[in-house]
Length: 287
Image (cartoon, one colour):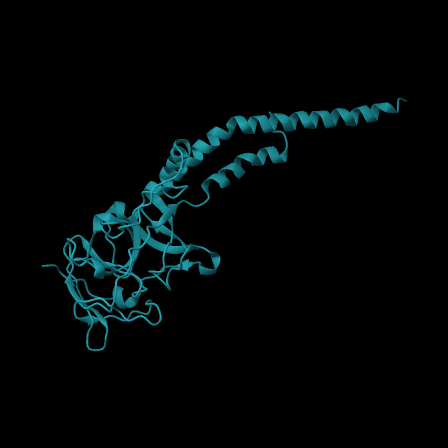
């Protein structure tokens, strides 16, 4: 009996396994462009119609939202004509003048700029042109929002509002105002009143500081990251329980304009790549 035959058999099996592994790697490299394209399409669909993730750039919504928090924004609801309600945290496009001085020039080369533009359009990278902000809705169309009463409280339609979400040490407003919200517009304020350049600071603009409903990108409904901040963004009863209204000052000092939100989508590409690579990790597929 030839003792070399088992050795040759094992060597042949090893060579066969290496050939299969090489074919698997080549197959994956050939299909990688398709994987990337599918991931980009999925990301675009998610960003356009369903949800979008924004990164909080400033402390204007503390303590509800911290700098660096990732919030998930529901973009589907506005497509069905549902308008934001009092107490909801919404992302909206700059109605004009709210982000003055925060447009930065890019130093990227032409090739890198084009690549970043593609991924920004898909929501996988932040865009240099994004002009979005995040605030809490305090007044909707027809509401009269006023601050402050004899007890220093903010009121909506004459009803004082309990605001447990305001940052510790802040008062409802250091600016005296009384505004009736026009149709299809919203009065919005940050939870960190002393840091938020919100509707109060734009009362000289068209709409008396209110923003168009059409500018609302969506409703932020959950903090997704970091996990230590994970949780749902609820609507306080003090605002949601107010009856629907039928439509018919000096600051203590300047507050700088706020940086725009950074946007993106959750890890679509890594998940797709892991899904496609799984068969090759397990070995050759049967015919």
